[in-house]
Image (cartoon, rainbow, N blue to C red; front, top):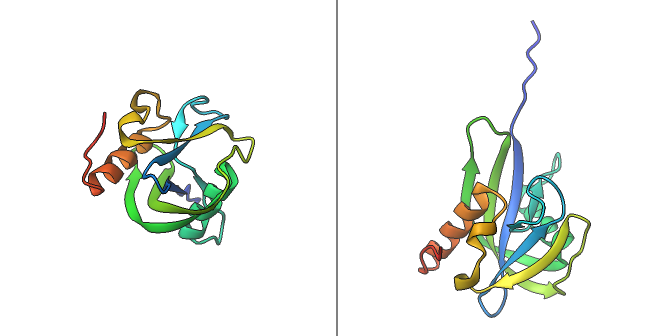
Length: 141
C-alpha cells in the first residue's frame, strides 16, 4: 500500500550577460558531456528558492554576482528527470573566473560566436535560442 514517487529534479540556470551584451558560458569539467559549453546552472537544493539557486550557481561556477532579468524558458523531456528553468541575468559584480571543479573554462561570447555545435544539452541550445529571440536577434546558428 506504499507509493514511492520518483519526482523530477529542478535545475536552475542563468544566461548571464555582461556590459557588452555578450553571454557567458561555462565549459563543463564533469560528466555528462565533459568539455562542452553550458550556461551556469545546477540542481536546486531542498527548500531553496529557484531564483536563489540560479544566482548561487552563477557565483559558484564562474565567480559572478548576477541579478535576474526575467524568465527565459522552461525545459522538460520525456523519460528524463531534470526540469530546467532558465533566467536572463545581468552581471553586477565579481571577477570572471573558473570558480569550482565543475568548470574547465568560463568565457563570454557575442551572439554570432556562440559555439552552437559544442553545447552540452538540448536545453542549452533551446534556452539560448529563446534568449536571442527575446532580444530580437533570432537564433544565431
